[in-house]
Image 1 (cartoon, rainbow, N blue to C red):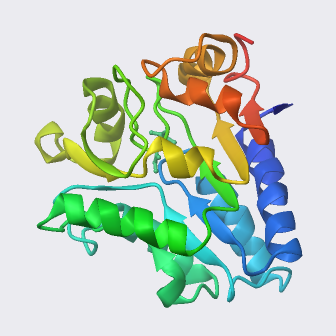
Image 2 (tube, helix red, strand yellow):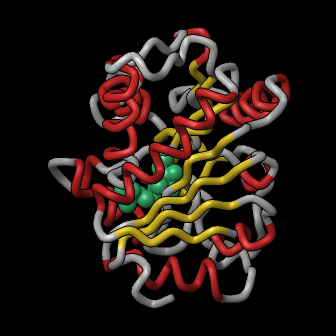
Length: 241
Ligand code: F6R
């Protein structure tokens, strides 16, 4: 595990972007696992900049997102499908046929979850998975639980997750309470994991994930078992290490 601590959010984003850039340059046809939320926004900005400068070509890359809210239409501006278009895909030369996001509107959720896992497997798994971390230690929307869920599954979001996500919605009542998330298996089977965290409110989750016992009550702690993890933190998120 390599832990890189940068002075601030901007430096964290640039460092994380340099990891993704190398991946795309060395393996243009790679499978990139994408996260949403506030943390990777700076990373996506850097990647868009690199594409616009002519330094990156995403046309052969394939993308799998970690998660999507339940019952939000992809056109809803709070859906993760919309987030990805707005912050990344609409600004690069990603091939729409190579973009994969769980269908939060699927009537048969179990079938959708099985389809998503099969799609990931068909592409040979994920080469580089970008991850954020929840204040409760979740990765994707794998919430603290009595056991690790290996497969893509429907999840009832934790109160702390709903509270953290509320900042993007105009009222608490609008915040989705369920999601579909990639399970722990495809995350752990990714060749490289790139976890980003910034801000004081992530410091305790980061400490528990990297220094605490490996347990499903702190899902990110399972990253300790992965042979190739890059953690990029700002100083505040690293303060309890
Ligand atoms: C989002 C995701 C989540 C977030 C986490 C942190 O696709 O998988 O695990 O990475 O909730 O969210 P932010 O970055 O908004 O603090």
